Image 1: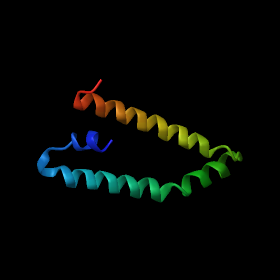
Image 2 (image 1 turned 30 degrees about the vertical axis):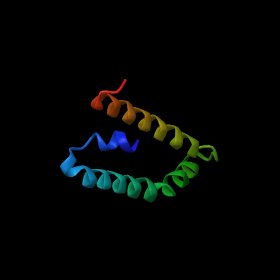
Image 3 (image 1 turned 90 degrees about the vertical axis):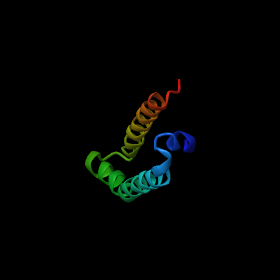
Image 4 (image 1 turned 60 degrees about the horizontal axis):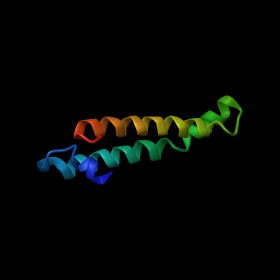
Length: 75
C-alpha cells in the first residue's frame, strides 16, 4: 500500500501528499469512529448495526483501491 500511495504523487511533493492524506484520514475516521456506531445502535435498536458501517467502509476501501490500481497502471 505504501508503494502504491507513493506512486500517486510526484517526487517533489510525495512526502507532503502522503502525510496530508494519512493524517486527514486518521482524523476523520478516528474522530468519528465512536460517534457513528453509537448513533447506529440508538437509531436502529440493534447491537449489530455497527457491522453495517464496517461493511460500507470495506466497500469504499475496495473501490478506492481499484481506482488507484487503474491510475498507476496495475492489473
